[in-house]
Amino acid sequence: MLIDEYFSTQQFIYVTTTGRSSGLPREIEIWFVERDGKLYIFAEHFDKANWVRNIQRNPSVSVRIGKQQFSAIARILDEKEDEALWRETQEKARKKYGWGEGLPVELTLQS
View 1: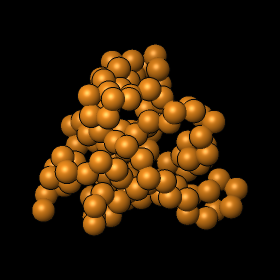
View 2: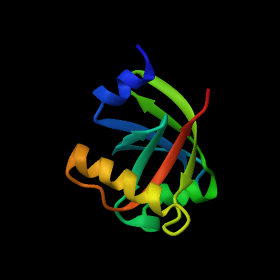
View 3: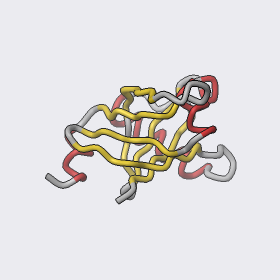
């Protein structure tokens, strides 16, 4: 199955960060949207979310979509520099889930 098929059939992805203090893996289940081959997740509590703080320390994460596992690099969007992308991804989330608030984080899957 192609990864695009996972994007359209899955409601959640699982993102594993590395704990910034413990160094242990920390997995979250989270809604996502896709744009141009990248995934976007949203932190309701912005940089107060532990997983966002972990990404700030170490942007290397793993992503599980259905039965597929990928390495990825996370990038926290900047509200000013990434304004158009920020709005577009939030709108995609609103259409998919009825909610799209929060801090967008971009996940670039590694091959």
